[in-house]
Length: 234
Image (cartoon, rainbow, N blue to C red; front, side, top):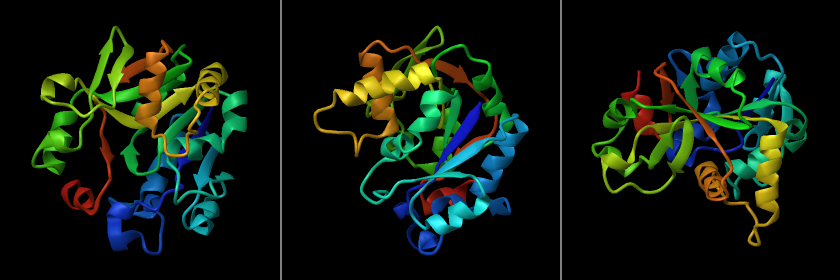
């Protein structure tokens, strides 16, 4: 099993905090987010780790990981960044994680044992974190539902809390077959996929009846999307 960290973007909602460093270098509990991620992945037994670089790539390259560079980082989304590591994805089982999240190895280990070709972790107790981050949790949350451990809905703007049975955490697993299903979908997109985000991809895969395993976790994790998150999450 390999792991790929998506760290190409600047994180513009962090404003001046990312003027000189990429978002993954922002500190949480005394050390950069990326160091927490590397520690969690290695604690889960994953030692072959790659990183998709972009903004301030000289900083993210300094960690000595296998690097995949997204030259179009300022005008593309996470899926395009992930595509830069397609050689790994087509040849090995891979864990994929966003670089602006905190998680422990307990959110990674279940993905190592899944027999599914595509899996994601989710937080069924999401409302507590979102209530700390937003006056109205519906402001930023997306729809999420699953049935018998398989994803049935993700990524829409919810009208009520009833449409949200959890929140996707930004951690995925692909087998080579699973990534092949992604590439088959992308090959038939007439408009390309430069701006396609990850939840939109997952939603489109569901529409094509591609099975996506969902794994619930109650372990500690946080998303850092704005300066407000750094202030309110400790």
